[in-house]
Length: 114
Ligand SMILES: Cc1cc2nc3c(=O)[nH]c(=O)nc-3n(C[C@H](O)[C@H](O)[C@H](O)COP(=O)(O)OP(=O)(O)OC[C@H]3O[C@@H](n4cnc5c(N)ncnc54)[C@H](O)[C@@H]3O)c2cc1C
Image 1: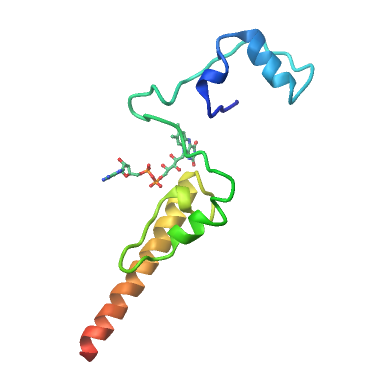
Image 2: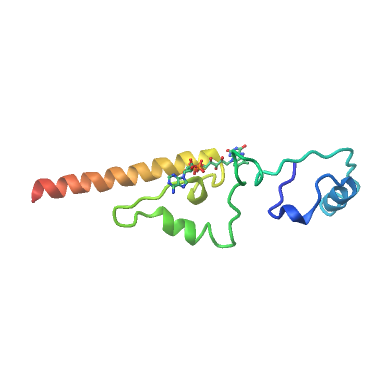
């Protein structure tokens, strides 16, 4: 299975073009058929997963994972574990839930004191 970030870069029905592209990675590979799905044109998906720019995982995602005031972000695209997968969505959701719980308990404590 192959994924491309630019669907216009190759005609997936063109057996020779697909074979030529795959031969760059695996010379001599025999391609006997192709099948493809355009996730961008899929009415339910409306796109594929996020394609990260270099540095996103070590800069952007790290920054977005931290609570910003009372706002906590969650999602697979910023997950520390398994980003881009369901597992990442769940781990990020749990991390955000822990952060929200801390913020709420802090607020509770502060209100009790005041
Ligand atoms: C084609 C495709 C195939 C995939 N295959 C796999 C796979 O085999 N295995 C795997 O582990 N992962 C796979 N993934 C990745 C996986 O689906 C995602 O990582 C996961 O669903 C992300 O979960 P999430 O909760 O972070 O975001 P999402 O599931 O995208 O949830 C975000 C939600 O927010 C809603 N939303 C957006 N904007 C707003 C707004 N302004 N107001 C209110 N709601 C809003 C959206 O409608 C959506 O319901 C695939 C993804 C795609 C696109």
